[in-house]
Image (cartoon, rainbow, N blue to C red; front, side):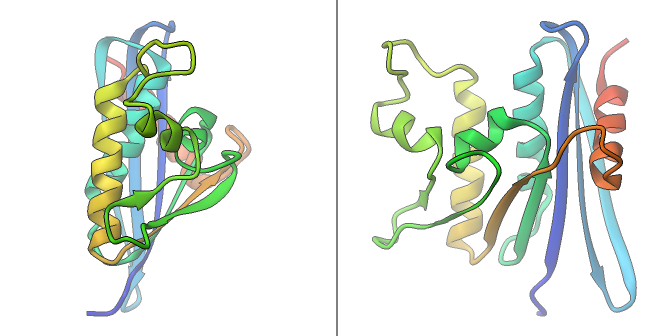
Length: 173
């Protein structure tokens, strides 16, 4: 099977924060002259913006087939700084020891310290972060490349505008 070049976008919204929130996710790729797009959204009655941002990114990772080149774009520094150093543009990679994924962002320290923060408290949104680690591990161990990139929100980027709208659709009324 031909290796796909997949682009994903994710976003989260919460109005007010905390309060009702939604997430949006899109994956797309071209094959044999056709562009394929998968769109998803959802939400919760009581949540936070950060929880919805993480959920949107997690849903993209779940939707993407394994063993392909994936670039995930988003406008949230919370997720990006968690997985890559600096939070702007970077890859997560396979450990040279073959055991899991190397994260260069906050996750690296959090996992080494048993998911605790420098001040001793637990990492917020712990279950979502653990699920993100599991999805990244699954992708990496099955041959995917994972590239994460920041895109400025509300700047006219078509994919980012689409997931922003999907996140708003996901907010429970």
